[in-house]
Length: 308
Image 1 (cartoon, rainbow, N blue to C red):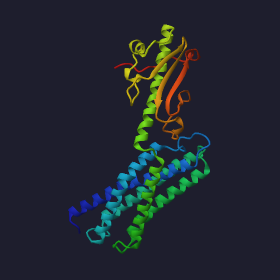
Image 2: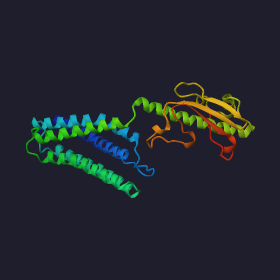
Image 3: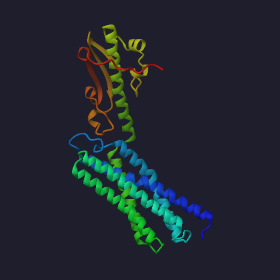
Image 4: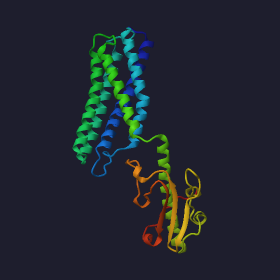
């Protein structure tokens, strides 16, 4: 019988390995799903069938953190088994290994339900088949490993165990390479967020100008009138990166122009994470939007964010 300290240590090894197993299996599946979504584009917008950088970034983060931890502690368990420090037939090993198989099965069942639901909602048949195959491969791979681990008599790290380890490392590294190929760099992601903030702020400014026009029957002469009379946050008038004021120019009594400098064109927004408003589509560089108040007089009053 092993000392209690060893029992607690091995329970810790198993629990941490199985916790990271869940993140790793889901992450590999999500990378495969987003690759499929990227390559096979839906004919109409679809929540689950559109390529999503947000999901892919989370999967990438999970792989970078969870996969090495899972590999390390799984290897530690095998070394403890080979050295005789962990008994082959110990109840901890059997119970926690079956928990790992349960985790793999639960993830597979959940993914299959989600994938089938997307197919029934109209997702392309080829995408459904590829995603279903991905689920079976991932669940089958992890499940096979743990079933083999429970049944094997030779506790040394034999050829089959080395093959399992090599396959896991190859898939994990390949998934990471695919992820970094498809997602934006942190710098570009930050600049795209800044572009989205510019669009949102210009929209809020246009709402405030509309409200001002309805109350005063004229356009404001400067942004200061919007801040004083309509409680518009002054920081909304400033570019999020340069902190310079957006350009405002009156063209005639019912027409004005708002200008801003954007880092990227809306054509770069290829993910469902990025909403593109047709009214505020833009190219990279300085972009001006000509707005005619007379065309918007039937718009409802907007809610401009109040000062705190």
